[in-house]
Image (cartoon, rainbow, N blue to C red; front, top):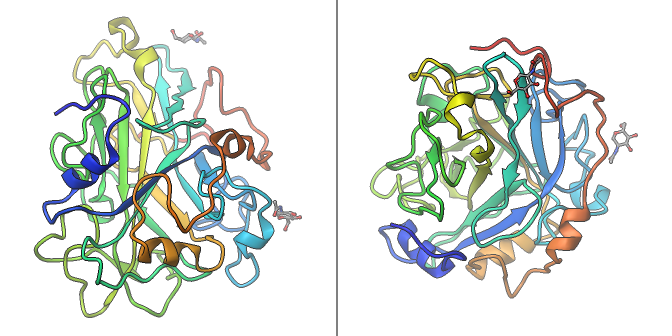
Length: 347
Ligand SMILES: *[C@@H]1O[C@H](CO)[C@@H](O)[C@H](O)[C@H]1NC(C)=O
Ligand SMILES: *[C@@H]1O[C@H](CO)[C@@H](O)[C@H](O)[C@H]1NC(C)=O
């Protein structure tokens, strides 16, 4: 199915779930910075092992101690259009590898119907039943999905997938259903490659983090667990329903859609993650919650949908794009590179 641009958000929301209308906040967060930092998995380490692209509040830093680093207080701007959202969101970065072995970064496009400078489209999805409770994240909350060293599909990366996008949108099965794949597509993609990263919707109700940044949250189980939005059942160990956080990234692979720019071996494709992964399995999403006060809870309770919300403050895309952060790690990440940042080995 194809939809004209800009696509109808109401239609998208209806399509997303077999359970009826799923209220989904959907907004663009432009690029804050692209650099080798990871304050969740490698706090205090600069540079971190591989390159990330980061969006959100400009208090993003080498370390973000949950006890002392209050994102809404320390940030002076956010690259997201909801101006009370100082959270940070980040993922691995896509590179193109030429036949001669050199690499160049694949840039991101703002998503269909949205404007901005690259970055990530962020979704917060509430249960469709207006009476169902949904508990917004607490200050200090953070989580990770995926595994930067993953070499096979599934496991902690089972809700991370890639789609070869047609020229004008394709919103079937947005939760890793067909035609998405955990691997990089093996053909030219007229609309670029879209990555989807879907976070768990069940929380243990106590811990804002855990040693692996994953075990304090869990995916829902049972009927509806594979729909978008918190519709399945939460396990007894993780009984609290949290908003479903989802990232969508459109990688503009179109400048490389030429036969002579692809590997001579037709079974191969030319894209790699900044981890060094040539297959696609190692993409991952990191989240550090940073909404001001109870703004996210209010937006969830109001079942806000789309990129405006009656109980939230907005800033213009122009303002959001202006919010960037100087790099702390000085190295070349653009142009033609002989090696991936961090000298990553290909795998
Ligand atoms: C980042 O951390 C350093 C060292 O702790 C601090 O000096 C600096 O102000 C921080 N930057 C931001 C934007 O918070
Ligand atoms: C490698 O190939 C790319 C793409 O064709 C080209 O732009 C770049 O200059 C080449 N690098 C070297 C070192 O030859």
